[in-house]
Image (tube, rainbow, N blue to C red; front, side, top):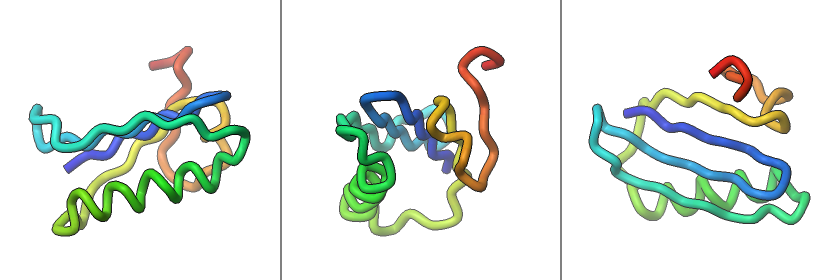
Length: 77
């Protein structure tokens, strides 16, 4: 499974893919509270897919640059 997380200036988007199958997606406004928005998305994901474990995470979006995992800028992606 792969999780894609896009952290924008006003919204956070998340998708979970199992191969090419979309298993979960969410779009939320964070109101400047990025960490809280990310926590809320992962809580939603945990409720929707409690069996999920061992997924890979990739981030995009300028506010995501401070996170400790692979990061891809939209300019390079």
